[in-house]
Length: 105
Image (tube, rainbow, N blue to C red; front, side, top):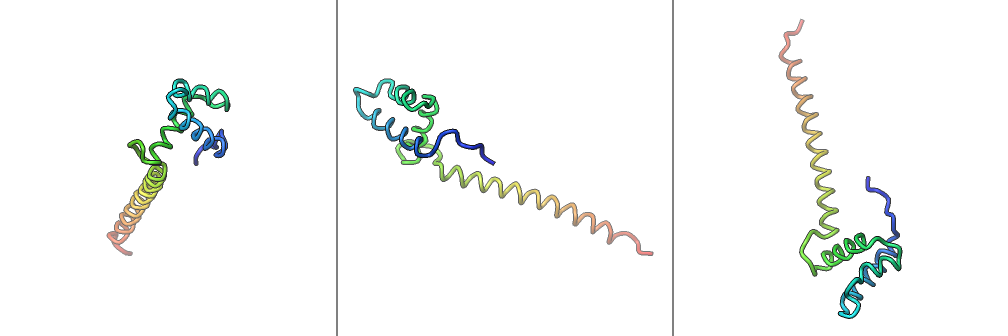
């Protein structure tokens, strides 16, 4: 289970939007993430990570999108469950095969 989010989604979206707009303007580009982070009470490094992920999601930067990462995590969880089920099935079949090989009284 994922940890609860510290910041509301609305604040996150607003901060990313402000940071992207500030970084487009050459005058406000320098220190934009730090300034916006301080104004909104967000760690600048956290804001930088949000902006990077937003750029990846929009296709402006290479990387794994949020949707792909979520789907990948779901598939990995499903693979773990299926492997566990296979181990249980193999153990059960070995147990029943051994029961069939025993001589009956």
